[in-house]
Length: 349
Ligand code: SAH
Image (tube, rainbow, N blue to C red; front, side, top):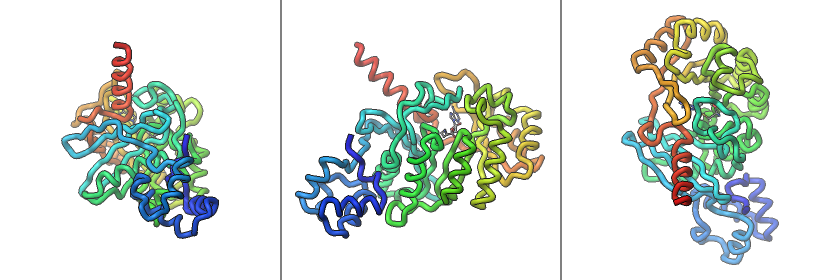
């Protein structure tokens, strides 16, 4: 497989042009094309012979669009094909205050949360930093006429902290002033909860918004829906979040899927309050997005807001997340699952 040019940081690009015997300024030219997600045909300011050599080992556009679905609210779900023939999903979400992109960091996911469509078939492989970045670059180019993108969330398929090195490199690349230049405050990493790597992120100088997929306030309950809860306790996680806050000064986010009758009772309010006491945080309540492989249902809108009010009443900062794009094949992983399953059916017939 060729190396995507967008996998390279400024130092690596400098090293590359010198290896090819090219003048230093070529690194900046390449970076400009990489950031614009240009094809090699667009690299018209570089010598043809150099492009010919370069394209033997490197790729300019590691992702191609397989299909897309546009929702009535303007959200777009893209299905991309990688050079190795894998499929990954990304979502574009337009907001009044700017546009965001939700990227995937793995093909499939090995974390095995029962409610999640991305993990249905397990982990296939990690995406490289460049393959993660290419999703944002492609969509920024596609949406250039509406101002590009200014926010990144790592909430697509995969577990960012289980693909640590590529996640770290991706954040640095997307944050680079001569790249997409997305500020740390506009980058969110969502994790199912790997405490060592939460602390490692802060130690590596990253101060992005950190979201923990908590979904239940006790270990007993969390174990019923998230396999990772067998390895790490909620106490360990909350302690890691406290460390992250101390090192970065960033309020942390707790994501909490509302599963009707399972984790939305008065008892859950009490337990959440106990658990989160003393942590500078905000709870994002997400009504469960029904998937093909999980039978539970979200509470009604009224019940979701009532749960939110109960949390606020006991001093927990909380809000109900408006779910966008749910009319475009629902939660993450479902467009891929449906497309891949349809392809398999077509092959058989
Ligand atoms: N692996 C990371 C990021 C990917 S999932 C994580 O676990 O945080 C992004 C978010 O979507 C997580 O909070 C995840 O729990 C949530 N999610 C997954 N399936 C969902 C569903 N069916 N309905 C609502 N949220 C879901």
